[in-house]
Image (cartoon, rainbow, N blue to C red; front, top):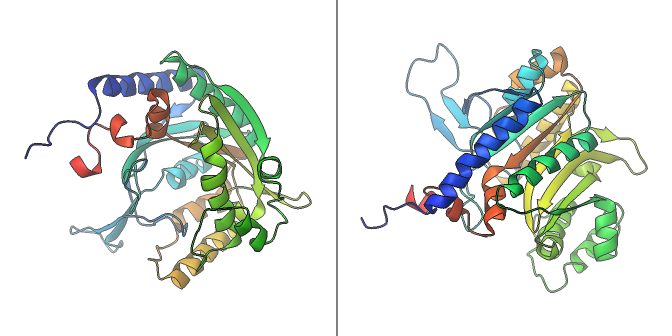
Length: 323
């Protein structure tokens, strides 16, 4: 075998180590506790757009399920810690997603996720942007920050209202981009407009924060009863790369269960695996999740932006094809 050498250069590996040190120092300054949670879980991610790896445990289980799921993020156990009273916390570690391999994706990657008690998504936006600016400073860069609501972004750049435009208008706004429509929902068309029409045009030196999404894209965020209602979440982009996704966190156990069940129904309809619900998370929410905001940031994507590369292999010691 001849391709045994790392896919990232030694300088990139050293930059990763410096970034980890910066992250830990950043949160130490702010009194945010670093924690470590399980990589294997009894429950998988129900999101229809995220595929989980699963495996079978061969040892003694004392009645517990043998099927375990590799985490797609540390979100659920971190929220259990919050409900137990741990306070502000973060985790920096590996997560896993099936079917995601290519130029910008690797099935295992590094995620930074943190939670701030008593904060909403707007306040957390500022901290996430500050962390990215500090990371860019490691390579002598700074990005101009721009904030916009989801609705304003689509209105200004595409000339349509993403909250009210019908599906035909959304499809037409894709222009020359041709996508097979079978099985796609209105939210899928909104996502395609972001990835195919909007993101490619984002300036490389711009730190863009998009906030207040359609209620139908709430995921695990709270819904604010505006007219129309909005999901209190944000996404952060550095140039065309999406780096982070944050929420003003939903704390209602009954609503969360209903959202999980809706996800499972979509999965069943699509013929996808239907993971079991995370009953431990739901019990923690029923016990009482403090008001908080949380955000997940893709560390490998951030390193790609810092180095000006569009290949995730350039920031990984060994990418999927060399693992």
